[in-house]
Image 1 (cartoon, helix red, strand yellow):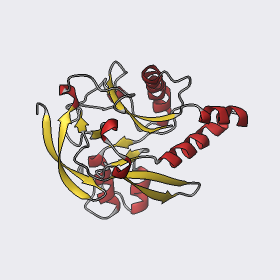
Image 2: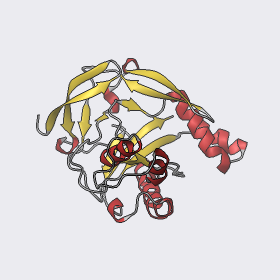
Image 3: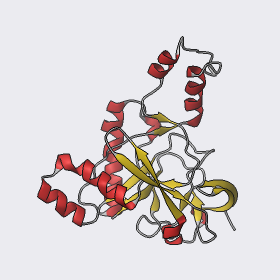
Length: 239
């Protein structure tokens, strides 16, 4: 169809060539409530902020993201708690440097793996190609509990968790996205059998994610040529 591409998506049961539709060509805009994701605009451009600076991210990006999520969800309160910069090329350069792979493409090479690790920008991460969701239902509730505990007494915390709590990711491009756009699956096209739980053990907690299994009924989409000041919101947990 119009705006569709064939892409090899990596599922829990292996890679599969999948039709991925350009959501911009859909008859109606995607919504966070119906589809699990939505594209918003009008946010300050992330390209104008040093996304590797904790101070600038907290001061300039966190507040506008919180406002956008509040507008889209109607949430009574929004707590921003994490920040990652996905830059596959830059991450690969540092990985090659620390592993003796010939140094950065700009010609700079650290003296040791320790120097490379110390020189790597904060928050830098690569691209994740496996189709997944960040939280299982149980892990989403527990993550919400852990994040909210410092801000609420036990009674208010219990009341909040008895209500509706969601975890929403916000993706802001720093330039026009020409490679590795985010693939999303419309919520109504996913069934419980389409996911498998994978557990991760951290120092302070145990996390669970859903890895996606392929199914013909799934409707996968992407947003072509995303650019500042656009922002893609998508839910990873909704009680």
